[in-house]
Length: 379
Image (cartoon, rainbow, N blue to C red; front, side, top):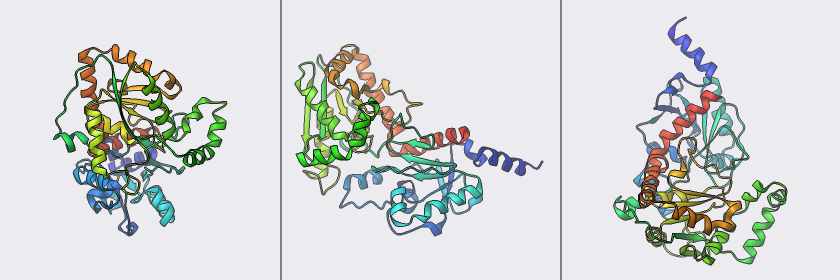
Protein backbone atom coordinates (compact mmCIF):
# COMPACT_ATOMS: atom_id res chain seq x y z
CA UNK A 1 0.00 0.00 0.00
CA UNK A 2 1.43 3.46 -0.88
CA UNK A 3 2.48 5.49 2.15
CA UNK A 4 0.05 8.34 1.44
CA UNK A 5 -2.87 5.95 0.95
CA UNK A 6 -2.07 4.23 4.25
CA UNK A 7 -1.85 7.59 5.99
CA UNK A 8 -5.28 8.63 4.68
CA UNK A 9 -6.79 5.34 5.77
CA UNK A 10 -5.43 5.83 9.31
CA UNK A 11 -6.73 9.40 9.34
CA UNK A 12 -10.20 8.20 8.41
CA UNK A 13 -10.09 5.48 11.06
CA UNK A 14 -9.03 7.92 13.81
CA UNK A 15 -11.23 10.74 12.53
CA UNK A 16 -8.43 13.28 12.14
CA UNK A 17 -5.38 14.16 10.09
CA UNK A 18 -2.36 12.10 11.11
CA UNK A 19 -0.21 15.18 11.80
CA UNK A 20 -2.08 15.93 15.01
CA UNK A 21 0.48 13.94 17.00
CA UNK A 22 2.70 17.03 16.68
CA UNK A 23 2.52 20.06 18.94
CA UNK A 24 1.73 22.24 15.91
CA UNK A 25 -1.69 22.38 14.26
CA UNK A 26 -3.00 23.99 11.12
CA UNK A 27 -6.64 25.07 11.02
CA UNK A 28 -8.64 25.44 7.83
CA UNK A 29 -10.65 28.65 7.48
CA UNK A 30 -12.33 29.28 4.14
CA UNK A 31 -11.90 32.98 3.19
CA UNK A 32 -15.51 32.91 2.00
CA UNK A 33 -16.62 32.42 5.62
CA UNK A 34 -15.29 35.81 6.67
CA UNK A 35 -17.98 38.28 7.72
CA UNK A 36 -18.08 41.76 9.20
CA UNK A 37 -17.95 41.71 12.99
CA UNK A 38 -16.08 40.23 15.89
CA UNK A 39 -14.37 36.96 15.01
CA UNK A 40 -13.11 34.40 17.51
CA UNK A 41 -10.10 35.47 19.58
CA UNK A 42 -8.17 32.51 18.11
CA UNK A 43 -8.01 34.57 14.91
CA UNK A 44 -6.84 37.82 16.48
CA UNK A 45 -3.19 37.10 15.55
CA UNK A 46 -4.25 36.74 11.90
CA UNK A 47 -7.36 38.92 11.44
CA UNK A 48 -6.81 41.51 14.14
CA UNK A 49 -8.23 42.44 17.56
CA UNK A 50 -11.85 43.51 17.03
CA UNK A 51 -12.71 44.33 20.65
CA UNK A 52 -13.97 47.87 21.19
CA UNK A 53 -11.53 49.72 23.51
CA UNK A 54 -14.22 52.24 24.42
CA UNK A 55 -16.61 49.56 25.75
CA UNK A 56 -14.25 46.84 27.05
CA UNK A 57 -10.90 48.61 27.44
CA UNK A 58 -9.31 46.04 29.74
CA UNK A 59 -10.14 43.11 27.47
CA UNK A 60 -8.90 44.99 24.41
CA UNK A 61 -5.62 45.82 26.16
CA UNK A 62 -5.23 42.22 27.33
CA UNK A 63 -5.08 40.95 23.74
CA UNK A 64 -2.78 43.78 22.74
CA UNK A 65 -0.26 42.52 25.33
CA UNK A 66 -0.72 38.78 24.83
CA UNK A 67 -2.39 36.82 22.09
CA UNK A 68 -2.66 33.20 21.07
CA UNK A 69 0.76 31.73 20.35
CA UNK A 70 1.26 31.40 16.59
CA UNK A 71 4.39 29.29 17.10
CA UNK A 72 2.08 26.32 17.75
CA UNK A 73 -0.69 26.90 15.19
CA UNK A 74 -1.52 28.49 11.87
CA UNK A 75 -4.50 28.94 9.57
CA UNK A 76 -4.74 27.90 5.94
CA UNK A 77 -7.21 28.15 3.08
CA UNK A 78 -5.96 24.85 1.65
CA UNK A 79 -8.02 22.04 3.15
CA UNK A 80 -5.45 19.33 2.35
CA UNK A 81 -2.92 21.09 4.63
CA UNK A 82 -5.26 21.29 7.63
CA UNK A 83 -5.41 19.23 10.81
CA UNK A 84 -8.82 20.64 11.77
CA UNK A 85 -11.48 23.09 10.64
CA UNK A 86 -11.97 26.25 12.71
CA UNK A 87 -15.31 28.07 12.68
CA UNK A 88 -14.13 31.69 12.54
CA UNK A 89 -16.84 33.22 14.76
CA UNK A 90 -18.11 32.35 18.19
CA UNK A 91 -21.11 30.09 18.43
CA UNK A 92 -23.31 32.85 19.84
CA UNK A 93 -22.43 35.21 16.98
CA UNK A 94 -23.12 32.49 14.43
CA UNK A 95 -26.48 31.60 15.98
CA UNK A 96 -27.53 35.24 15.99
CA UNK A 97 -26.14 36.48 12.68
CA UNK A 98 -25.45 33.64 10.22
CA UNK A 99 -26.74 30.31 11.59
CA UNK A 100 -25.95 28.39 8.40
CA UNK A 101 -22.19 28.74 9.00
CA UNK A 102 -21.94 26.04 11.68
CA UNK A 103 -23.44 23.41 9.41
CA UNK A 104 -21.24 24.56 6.52
CA UNK A 105 -18.07 24.24 8.62
CA UNK A 106 -19.16 20.85 9.92
CA UNK A 107 -19.84 19.49 6.45
CA UNK A 108 -16.40 20.59 5.24
CA UNK A 109 -14.74 18.91 8.26
CA UNK A 110 -16.72 15.71 7.73
CA UNK A 111 -15.77 15.49 4.06
CA UNK A 112 -12.09 15.97 4.94
CA UNK A 113 -12.26 13.51 7.89
CA UNK A 114 -10.81 16.07 10.28
CA UNK A 115 -12.30 17.61 13.46
CA UNK A 116 -14.21 20.86 13.70
CA UNK A 117 -13.28 23.29 16.48
CA UNK A 118 -15.99 25.67 17.71
CA UNK A 119 -15.50 28.66 20.02
CA UNK A 120 -18.47 28.62 22.41
CA UNK A 121 -16.77 30.60 25.18
CA UNK A 122 -19.63 32.71 26.48
CA UNK A 123 -21.86 33.30 29.47
CA UNK A 124 -24.67 31.77 27.41
CA UNK A 125 -24.06 28.09 26.71
CA UNK A 126 -26.01 26.27 24.02
CA UNK A 127 -25.51 22.53 23.41
CA UNK A 128 -23.64 21.54 20.25
CA UNK A 129 -24.09 17.90 19.31
CA UNK A 130 -22.27 17.29 16.06
CA UNK A 131 -19.98 14.31 15.32
CA UNK A 132 -16.24 14.94 15.53
CA UNK A 133 -16.83 18.48 16.78
CA UNK A 134 -14.92 19.88 19.74
CA UNK A 135 -16.22 22.85 21.67
CA UNK A 136 -14.25 25.43 23.65
CA UNK A 137 -16.16 26.54 26.76
CA UNK A 138 -15.57 28.56 29.92
CA UNK A 139 -18.09 26.87 32.15
CA UNK A 140 -20.05 23.65 32.66
CA UNK A 141 -20.85 21.28 35.52
CA UNK A 142 -18.94 18.14 36.39
CA UNK A 143 -22.12 16.14 36.88
CA UNK A 144 -23.36 17.16 33.40
CA UNK A 145 -20.28 16.24 31.35
CA UNK A 146 -19.85 16.44 27.61
CA UNK A 147 -16.86 14.56 26.33
CA UNK A 148 -16.28 16.96 23.42
CA UNK A 149 -16.13 20.11 25.56
CA UNK A 150 -12.69 21.61 26.22
CA UNK A 151 -12.79 23.91 29.23
CA UNK A 152 -10.62 27.01 29.12
CA UNK A 153 -10.15 29.80 31.65
CA UNK A 154 -11.99 33.05 30.95
CA UNK A 155 -9.50 35.46 29.43
CA UNK A 156 -7.61 37.03 32.33
CA UNK A 157 -4.96 39.72 32.21
CA UNK A 158 -1.50 39.23 33.65
CA UNK A 159 -1.94 41.66 36.53
CA UNK A 160 1.58 41.07 37.84
CA UNK A 161 2.99 42.15 34.49
CA UNK A 162 0.67 45.16 34.17
CA UNK A 163 1.04 46.53 37.71
CA UNK A 164 4.29 45.06 39.09
CA UNK A 165 6.59 44.77 36.06
CA UNK A 166 6.20 41.00 36.33
CA UNK A 167 8.08 40.86 39.65
CA UNK A 168 6.53 38.42 42.11
CA UNK A 169 6.68 39.39 45.77
CA UNK A 170 6.08 36.39 48.03
CA UNK A 171 4.27 37.02 51.28
CA UNK A 172 5.54 35.65 54.58
CA UNK A 173 2.99 33.52 56.40
CA UNK A 174 0.90 35.47 58.89
CA UNK A 175 -0.53 34.02 62.09
CA UNK A 176 -4.11 34.58 60.99
CA UNK A 177 -5.09 34.10 57.33
CA UNK A 178 -6.04 37.24 55.40
CA UNK A 179 -8.69 36.77 52.71
CA UNK A 180 -9.29 39.35 49.97
CA UNK A 181 -12.37 39.98 47.87
CA UNK A 182 -13.19 42.72 45.38
CA UNK A 183 -16.32 42.50 43.29
CA UNK A 184 -20.05 42.40 42.90
CA UNK A 185 -21.72 40.83 45.94
CA UNK A 186 -24.91 42.79 46.62
CA UNK A 187 -28.25 42.96 44.83
CA UNK A 188 -31.43 44.95 44.91
CA UNK A 189 -34.61 43.14 45.91
CA UNK A 190 -35.82 43.27 42.31
CA UNK A 191 -32.59 41.67 41.04
CA UNK A 192 -32.79 38.95 43.67
CA UNK A 193 -36.41 38.04 42.97
CA UNK A 194 -35.76 37.96 39.22
CA UNK A 195 -32.77 35.65 39.70
CA UNK A 196 -34.62 33.27 42.01
CA UNK A 197 -37.54 32.97 39.59
CA UNK A 198 -35.16 32.25 36.71
CA UNK A 199 -33.37 29.57 38.76
CA UNK A 200 -36.54 27.96 40.10
CA UNK A 201 -36.30 24.68 38.09
CA UNK A 202 -32.74 24.02 39.28
CA UNK A 203 -33.59 25.05 42.85
CA UNK A 204 -36.49 22.57 42.88
CA UNK A 205 -34.26 19.79 41.56
CA UNK A 206 -31.74 20.72 44.24
CA UNK A 207 -34.20 19.57 46.90
CA UNK A 208 -33.56 16.00 45.78
CA UNK A 209 -30.05 16.28 44.32
CA UNK A 210 -27.73 18.76 46.03
CA UNK A 211 -25.55 19.08 42.94
CA UNK A 212 -28.23 21.20 41.27
CA UNK A 213 -27.92 23.75 44.06
CA UNK A 214 -24.64 24.75 42.43
CA UNK A 215 -26.64 26.34 39.59
CA UNK A 216 -27.53 29.46 41.55
CA UNK A 217 -26.32 32.79 40.22
CA UNK A 218 -22.76 33.43 41.36
CA UNK A 219 -23.60 36.52 43.36
CA UNK A 220 -25.54 34.36 45.86
CA UNK A 221 -22.40 32.34 46.60
CA UNK A 222 -20.21 35.43 46.78
CA UNK A 223 -22.60 37.20 49.11
CA UNK A 224 -22.87 34.18 51.40
CA UNK A 225 -19.11 33.60 51.52
CA UNK A 226 -18.44 37.27 52.27
CA UNK A 227 -20.97 37.29 55.10
CA UNK A 228 -19.64 34.06 56.66
CA UNK A 229 -16.02 35.17 56.54
CA UNK A 230 -16.78 38.65 57.88
CA UNK A 231 -18.48 37.22 60.96
CA UNK A 232 -15.59 34.95 61.90
CA UNK A 233 -12.67 35.87 64.19
CA UNK A 234 -10.64 33.06 62.61
CA UNK A 235 -9.79 35.09 59.51
CA UNK A 236 -9.02 38.68 58.64
CA UNK A 237 -10.91 40.07 55.68
CA UNK A 238 -9.97 42.68 53.11
CA UNK A 239 -13.26 43.12 51.24
CA UNK A 240 -14.33 45.66 48.62
CA UNK A 241 -17.95 44.74 47.97
CA UNK A 242 -19.57 46.38 44.96
CA UNK A 243 -23.20 46.73 43.93
CA UNK A 244 -22.65 46.33 40.19
CA UNK A 245 -20.69 44.34 37.63
CA UNK A 246 -17.36 46.06 36.97
CA UNK A 247 -15.97 44.58 33.74
CA UNK A 248 -17.97 46.82 31.41
CA UNK A 249 -17.92 50.62 31.21
CA UNK A 250 -21.74 50.75 31.26
CA UNK A 251 -22.00 49.04 34.65
CA UNK A 252 -18.72 49.86 36.42
CA UNK A 253 -18.84 52.15 39.47
CA UNK A 254 -15.44 53.67 38.63
CA UNK A 255 -13.07 53.80 35.67
CA UNK A 256 -11.98 50.21 34.84
CA UNK A 257 -8.29 50.90 35.41
CA UNK A 258 -8.99 52.34 38.86
CA UNK A 259 -11.07 49.31 39.82
CA UNK A 260 -8.33 47.00 38.57
CA UNK A 261 -5.72 48.87 40.66
CA UNK A 262 -7.91 48.48 43.76
CA UNK A 263 -8.21 44.76 43.08
CA UNK A 264 -4.45 44.38 42.74
CA UNK A 265 -3.67 46.35 45.89
CA UNK A 266 -6.22 44.33 47.84
CA UNK A 267 -4.88 40.98 46.70
CA UNK A 268 -1.22 41.86 47.20
CA UNK A 269 -1.91 42.79 50.82
CA UNK A 270 -3.66 39.45 51.46
CA UNK A 271 -2.84 35.77 51.66
CA UNK A 272 -5.84 34.33 49.83
CA UNK A 273 -8.22 35.63 47.18
CA UNK A 274 -11.86 34.57 47.42
CA UNK A 275 -13.14 33.16 44.15
CA UNK A 276 -16.76 32.18 43.46
CA UNK A 277 -18.52 31.56 40.18
CA UNK A 278 -20.01 34.30 38.02
CA UNK A 279 -23.17 34.05 35.91
CA UNK A 280 -21.64 31.05 34.11
CA UNK A 281 -20.10 28.38 36.32
CA UNK A 282 -16.65 29.91 35.98
CA UNK A 283 -14.77 32.99 37.13
CA UNK A 284 -12.11 35.29 35.72
CA UNK A 285 -11.13 36.23 39.27
CA UNK A 286 -9.52 32.82 39.93
CA UNK A 287 -6.96 33.43 37.21
CA UNK A 288 -6.37 37.06 38.14
CA UNK A 289 -5.57 35.92 41.68
CA UNK A 290 -3.14 33.31 40.36
CA UNK A 291 -1.51 35.87 38.05
CA UNK A 292 -0.46 37.87 41.12
CA UNK A 293 0.95 34.84 42.89
CA UNK A 294 -1.74 34.75 45.54
CA UNK A 295 -3.52 31.60 46.68
CA UNK A 296 -7.07 31.29 45.31
CA UNK A 297 -9.78 30.26 47.76
CA UNK A 298 -12.12 28.54 45.31
CA UNK A 299 -15.78 27.93 46.11
CA UNK A 300 -16.33 24.79 44.08
CA UNK A 301 -19.80 24.79 42.53
CA UNK A 302 -19.30 21.55 40.58
CA UNK A 303 -16.95 23.51 38.33
CA UNK A 304 -15.02 22.08 35.39
CA UNK A 305 -11.66 23.60 36.30
CA UNK A 306 -9.51 24.03 33.16
CA UNK A 307 -6.85 21.40 32.49
CA UNK A 308 -7.47 19.73 35.87
CA UNK A 309 -6.54 16.34 34.41
CA UNK A 310 -2.91 17.46 34.16
CA UNK A 311 -2.77 20.40 36.60
CA UNK A 312 -3.07 19.69 40.34
CA UNK A 313 -5.03 22.64 41.73
CA UNK A 314 -4.22 21.62 45.31
CA UNK A 315 -0.60 22.69 44.73
CA UNK A 316 -1.59 26.35 44.44
CA UNK A 317 -5.16 26.79 45.71
CA UNK A 318 -7.62 25.86 48.43
CA UNK A 319 -10.81 24.33 46.99
CA UNK A 320 -13.91 24.26 49.21
CA UNK A 321 -17.11 22.50 48.19
CA UNK A 322 -20.06 24.92 48.12
CA UNK A 323 -21.97 22.58 50.44
CA UNK A 324 -19.29 23.20 53.10
CA UNK A 325 -19.45 26.98 52.97
CA UNK A 326 -20.95 27.20 56.44
CA UNK A 327 -17.55 25.95 57.69
CA UNK A 328 -15.50 28.21 55.43
CA UNK A 329 -13.61 30.15 58.16
CA UNK A 330 -12.71 26.94 59.99
CA UNK A 331 -11.52 25.28 56.77
CA UNK A 332 -9.36 28.26 55.82
CA UNK A 333 -7.90 28.64 59.31
CA UNK A 334 -7.08 24.95 59.60
CA UNK A 335 -5.52 24.87 56.14
CA UNK A 336 -3.44 27.96 56.85
CA UNK A 337 -2.23 26.63 60.21
CA UNK A 338 -1.08 23.41 58.53
CA UNK A 339 1.24 25.18 56.10
CA UNK A 340 4.89 25.72 56.86
CA UNK A 341 6.37 29.09 55.90
CA UNK A 342 8.15 27.41 53.00
CA UNK A 343 5.02 25.63 51.78
CA UNK A 344 2.99 28.83 51.97
CA UNK A 345 5.46 30.64 49.72
CA UNK A 346 5.76 27.62 47.43
CA UNK A 347 2.00 27.74 46.80
CA UNK A 348 2.25 31.40 45.83
CA UNK A 349 4.99 30.61 43.32
CA UNK A 350 2.98 27.65 42.03
CA UNK A 351 -0.04 29.91 41.47
CA UNK A 352 2.03 32.29 39.38
CA UNK A 353 3.61 29.42 37.43
CA UNK A 354 0.22 27.83 36.74
CA UNK A 355 -1.06 31.11 35.35
CA UNK A 356 1.88 31.56 32.99
CA UNK A 357 2.02 27.94 31.82
CA UNK A 358 -1.69 27.14 31.61
CA UNK A 359 -3.98 30.14 31.97
CA UNK A 360 -2.44 33.17 30.26
CA UNK A 361 -3.70 33.74 26.73
CA UNK A 362 -0.34 32.95 25.13
CA UNK A 363 -0.31 29.53 26.87
CA UNK A 364 -3.80 28.47 25.84
CA UNK A 365 -3.27 27.15 22.33
CA UNK A 366 -0.63 24.64 23.36
CA UNK A 367 -3.05 23.27 25.94
CA UNK A 368 -5.95 23.33 23.46
CA UNK A 369 -3.91 21.24 21.04
CA UNK A 370 -3.05 18.77 23.80
CA UNK A 371 -6.72 18.43 24.71
CA UNK A 372 -7.76 18.09 21.07
CA UNK A 373 -5.21 15.37 20.47
CA UNK A 374 -6.27 13.43 23.56
CA UNK A 375 -10.00 13.67 22.88
CA UNK A 376 -9.68 12.90 19.18
CA UNK A 377 -7.72 9.73 19.86
CA UNK A 378 -10.39 8.73 22.39
CA UNK A 379 -13.28 9.34 19.97
